[in-house]
Image 1 (tube, rainbow, N blue to C red):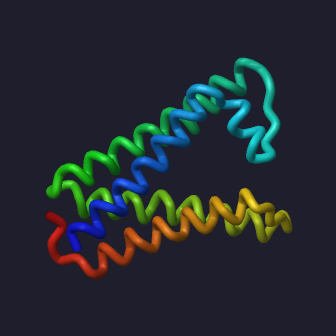
Image 2 (image 1 turned 90 degrees about the vertical axis):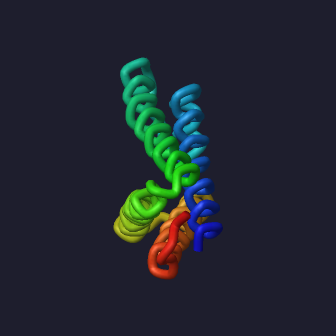
Amino acid sequence: MPLLSRITLWLGGLGFLGFGIACLVAPLEVLAAAGVTLSGPVAATEVRAFYGGLEIGLGLCLVLAALRSHYRRSGLLLCLAAYGGIALARAAGMAIDGVATPFLWFALLTELSLAALAGFALLRGNRFD
């Protein structure tokens, strides 16, 4: 399953990179589009650091794993854990808070899909090169 592994890692990596760069460049606006309102330079710096920096780092790790076969299995585990953890927390939040906006559904389906692809690639692939 080398092709599925690489596609999954590229999709997951580019997803993290895209969102991370957007949060680095326009943190308050990105979160406002998701319905989260924050204000001020301290909030912007915190969003840049956590949502921007962490997601850029995760994205770079997944892209590196897509490019280097010896990192592929570890990258798929990271993809499964990261997107799976986000999806579980989002689903729990939606249930606890009783909210289900189109944005939340889109994000949840994206996260579940990437986690499922990574899990499937791990289960099916004996070779990752």
